[in-house]
Length: 398
View 1 (cartoon, rainbow, N blue to C red):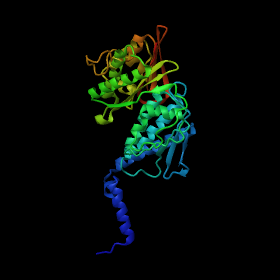
View 2 (cartoon, one colour):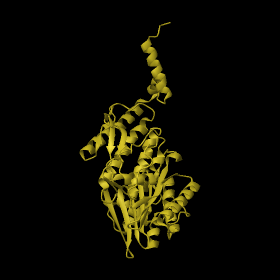
View 3 (cartoon, rainbow, N blue to C red):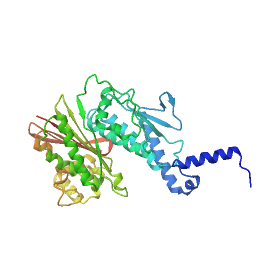
View 4 (cartoon, one colour):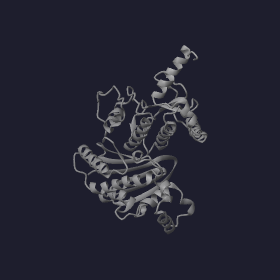
């Protein structure tokens, strides 16, 4: 029998520890098909190319963390000073998309070793963030949650240099509940309370109607605590939220994804200075514009375009597709127990006779608002796509 050297023995020990920690053995790696390896390589190469381009377009990325240079193309994304979808949409969506794309590399390789040349997300730096809207905070929470799950919940926020108001808002939002490794800085001195109070976000999964019902009740109770009174017409908003949840189940995540992967996120906030209540709903699916052409209401969408004399060149624009989806009185399932479909989303602001509904999905934005009893709407095509679907209701309480 050939004698094993000390160096070989150490290598064997390291290999066994590596495999016990969930990494694949060399034999398993050889079993990965050449085609799969090529597909995986295509993913990280596309992500590398996209990130490099966006760095040239202002995406702030560094390769050092807490004074130490990261190895193997590790990256830190630095959030901008302001994040919202109204007056800083481009920079906000750019950062959110960067997180999503870099996380996709972890999802593709799972427990397998990622090539050294691939960009790897190591941290998202919140230190410069001074203001964030309810909807942007919800989407950011969803993307960080996706990242944390992809690396087996090993993230730990570094909050030492966060702005106080940002820390307070994310603590209210329940952001730190995402992590097994919660930050050590659990209490800070509050010099003054922020204008906006957040409701602890809830995460639901498709196919669980009882869970969804309970979480909508939970949201209502928390909102009532913030505003200090009963919210009129809540039943109408409940109907809109139900429609949003149902659309996630049927349309947002087509294909082979399991129900556990089909998640939605929900939160609310109250601005004490303006007396405005906001409810935000988000899913990370394929988006309304992308699901419509394969739906059972596609013929109705085309009929809608024809009646309004909308040119065929406009039919594929995401903003126009959102407008059509909201205007048609049935969802793609054509079930009789589904109310008026996406029109249900509008009823809350119509019943209150004030406020707005905004839907962002990939390259489309649809907004309907009521001011002094007059209803208006607009569609906007966005250069940067927002992955998934974000629905926001905003009303001023009397």
